[in-house]
Image 1 (spheres, helix red, strand yellow):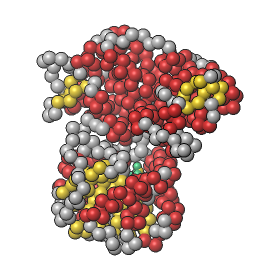
Image 2: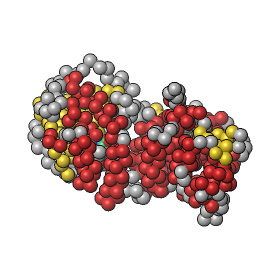
Image 3: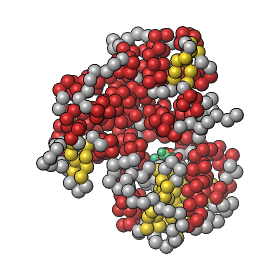
Image 4: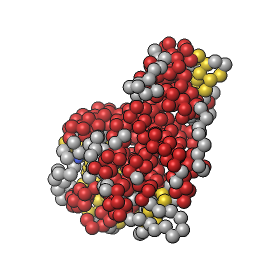
Length: 495
Ligand SMILES: C[S@@+](CC[C@H](N)C(=O)[O-])C[C@H]1O[C@@H](n2cnc3c(N)ncnc32)[C@H](O)[C@@H]1O
């Protein structure tokens, strides 16, 4: 008998905890430590402050301030009045006026870096670097909390102080082999501790935190996954879930210095440094290679969409920032005569070759190593140019010149297809896209854009017709010169 499907809300919540929850805490902590809330006024007669003024008052970088503000607007703690600026929500102002609550928030700021040592604390059951990390987790998750000024204060505190700790609990449970062990059978804590070579009390705290997340439960003295967790995670799906966690940890140190990045433009993880970019993109290419099959199902949907707009027979396709090659390969598979060029840096292209061999696409493929911002794309060379998840990796100031070169390289009737996150027109959501954008900021990469922002870049280079389409998980923006008919499928309505 097949097991019932996992609850979408549980899956979403666990994925959020694995990927974005620590980004959310970092945004709130950076806003608090930079004094951002204190700059905004609230209530009747309050005056919205423009982004430029706010950045100037904070002595900080405009884009950095925006990157931490946008999630706060998405969460409703800050309000945005179009064309005017930012205000503090009245209930936010009320709880931040409470000195005891502010002191509690301040005390949390020093825990970001120690929290990353949770695996060591669970192994030893002792303090780490003189800090009682297990006691801190116990107080946050397993003991009654001090009273807070209002209900919104509780939500703010939870996101600010507990979310990054939750992420770390999942990372630790994965790293110590606890999640893999919970998939198997219900087991008493001390037996688990002996098997995993960790301290029983340290493990007890970790299990308690997992229980508070609805992931683990104790019954008759034995620990196992809850029913909800067991529906989502089994021996096959657990590795996919766990794969996102090292990427989250790759940004941990940088997020611990988010305030510094916003104020001083100093980036602890700087992807504009060629050596760092090589390391991170290589790891990324091997990680996404591991999920090539499921990715391919998504990229083939985009190829189908393009196939409804123009024939792909004999088409020349360029995949810029190809990564594992999964987008270009989808177009290679769309017709037996399509030819695809895969462009990326040399160490990433190594990950593409095995996929092309397996899919028997080698004869109709060209691997092109180069920097997409400086290579010469020529004129009227390609029928379709793909930009899958590459825009957020590029410096925003380089985009006008980049799009001009790509537009020139498109043949008449050619299509440009951009995939990835798309923000609402007001840039106040979706939240996961805003956290993704914040990660791009903290690693000195590019930005996530809205459709009007894309249109403002594409129209001047002649790609005057652009629409967004919903794909499973993410969205695509398709643009052309106005010389291709749009398909029947509905475009995403303006947000
Ligand atoms: C987030 S990954 C996306 C990979 C793939 N397109 C996908 O959707 O799965 C971004 C890719 O862009 C590549 N990239 C970043 N900057 C680049 C540049 N200046 N020139 C060429 N490739 C670049 C990286 O090496 C990386 O493989």
